[in-house]
Image 1 (cartoon, rainbow, N blue to C red):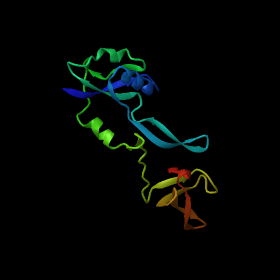
Image 2 (tube, one colour):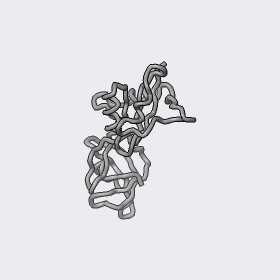
Image 3 (cartoon, rainbow, N blue to C red):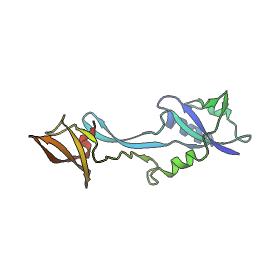
Image 4 (tube, rainbow, N blue to C red):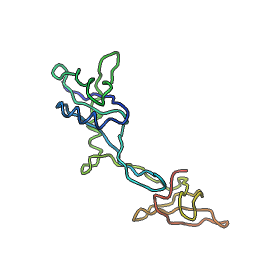
Length: 165
């Protein structure tokens, strides 16, 4: 019977391990996450591992040889319990694959702003102030409620200029 197994990799070598396992004709799944990160005062999109240092290999007990996986470049070992590789729960990898964006083959950062959330403004004339998230607008804009001059004011900002407080 075939199952998915977790493979533990060396730090930041998941892609190397994935390539080498595929070269050995193993079926491999390496889930990635696409997110927006702040780097040097700019927002950039990055693709990073969904589970750092882990990927999944589809193996058939009794038919596939597990031994070469341990000596593959980029791999430390398979995840083991009691010295024996154990499969991940049934349906886990299939659920991960079903939730990724089919065109880019990555998971999208599903951060959802909810009305009433406390936020902090990072850039612009209101930098450093804290407010309350009110609504999302088109074109990556958001409406924030700020206490200014003794009353609540609605301010429209870029979504990239706020973070949860």
